[in-house]
Length: 602
Image 1 (cartoon, one colour):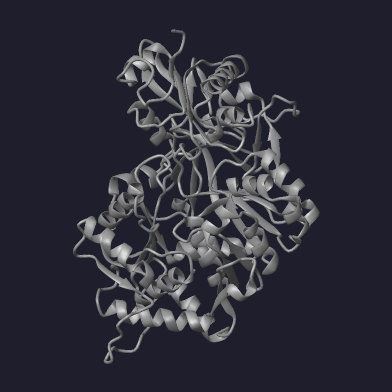
Image 2: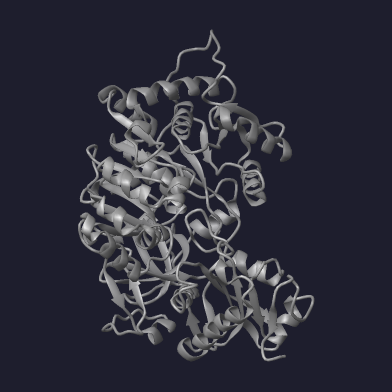
């Protein structure tokens, strides 16, 4: 790839060659065509040039601009404006009054990245300015990009002096297993990812992308914004809040705009399969949807079945389901299923899986199933013994390592973390691998993810994957079916690590001590008799009580910390006596003003 090829150069070419084509369409109401707001490639180019001139007048190339936008077209204009000014964009969720974690996240990122300016829209400027002041970031300029004070004597815009190795943005990781870190994504990384999309997904300028993913998330940023723009295609998007309120709106957006490529986390497919009504399904035509991408969290076979069955009458084909695996450190995708081929699902020997061997077996009612994440996307993928850094043969379960053009160069200003994550070196000396921290295996040339290395539970010599246990717990009772859980291990005496199950349940059970206790008993009995381990504690939480990242990944490390610090607000909890003595100050029920039971005691 030429060192002179940049994302900005590609967009400038589109502004000339396809000036009047719609680049972006924001569907303010996905069900109503008159609510659509569009930008052509020429419109986007003019708006971005204007912002680039404004930025250059106030800061040098390479400065960092935080992008804090509500849903709409403003984010995209600001991002391309940063490209045109050779300013590094830093996408971040909007600070929100009353949500301390969101404000702390924005503040931490601003300090880590050395932000020079926070860009937003006029309606959000008071919120952003108030956050800036409260955070003590007096040197950070706040500006509304829809109300710029253009200087009459401003010089005309000229193309940025950037090359393929120049940073496009800092994509801060969501922190599912640790503190957020800024991944440095270059023009080369983005263009390599788009080239993969063109080959693997058969995407082109005639494709129509669409969805509801927030732009500050890597899937939203790369797949929903940058890939279609670089291809010269059209992207149609809606507010993520609209999807959460009315999941059917996503499907209506796909139908009305004849979207053929739309991606979302696993939970979105599960929500649609459960909550879209028969009448709503009858009014849909999803025959245009040929790439229904799924990623960002563990994918369950039963969700693929449920979604395909639910929307088959609306023209949806199972072959459209496209499961992928990736992360911000690899720009987005490292592997993805082939277009037009239904995902491979294998039942595996559970006992062998606990001993780090992936072996498909005939499916029975009790055998675990794992969904393939497809084939490598122009990326070298190897599975390595994490203890010896030795590559494993096919079917061996170990840490997944990556190498290729899509892998970023490292973390912003974090040399030690960069070396630890991006400097994977095999026992034989070969280096340059990204250590993902994910456990998986390669079988038949396809990648299967089995869990996270840091989340793995070792119980009496058995390797237990928490997401498998969480999945089983959810299936035990209707009050748990659509809820999230986190299975973690905490230190305790006298037997070392103890397994704790933290599980959301229906809020309708609040205050019903008897039914909550029965639910805890059901969970503990299943753990002991069906999975084969003792749950030293079970904590039932309200919906939303399990912390997750923006993409839906369960933050197990954070939940473990909350349990150990008694920072949860449970509907009901039962702990073994030794855990209660260690982690609960009251040593008996009632710390939270709600029932708490010492297991085995009156």
